Amino acid sequence: MILENTQFLLSVLFGLPLLIAGIIQYFFPPKEINSLYGYRTKRSMKNNHNWKIAQIYSAKLLIVFGLSYSIIAFISLVIKIELMVFEIFLLLLLIVHCGVIFVLVEKRLRKFM
Figure 1: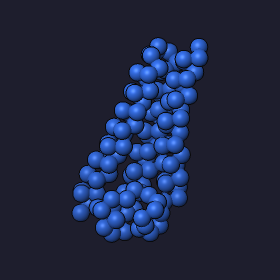
Figure 2: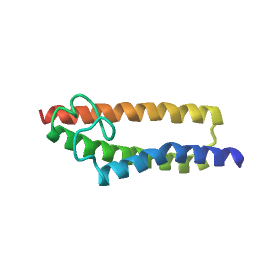
Figure 3: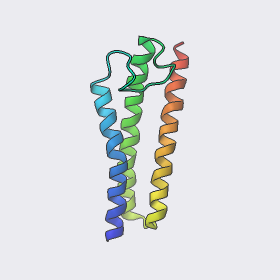
Figure 4: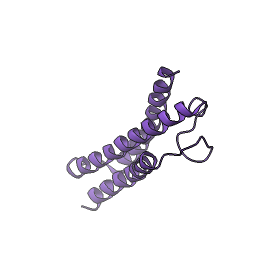
């Protein structure tokens, strides 16, 4: 029982920051290009058009990936996995999600150039 709760909590703790960041960025996107807040790459900071596209699209992806951790959390209540394996899985998934967000947003920005 403790193992199940730990996996559930880990999934929520991994996904909640992504979800919150996505919601904040979606509803309160940075209005101007800055080096502190938002999706910041050379391509996204090139002009205001790219900046706005990158902020909204990356926010949507953060929300989707944050919610995916909720699904994983509920699946973890059913499927029994060793805790260390589960932790490694969540960490690798987080890394993959970050990479996917980068690739998809940059691909979308290239489309508008």
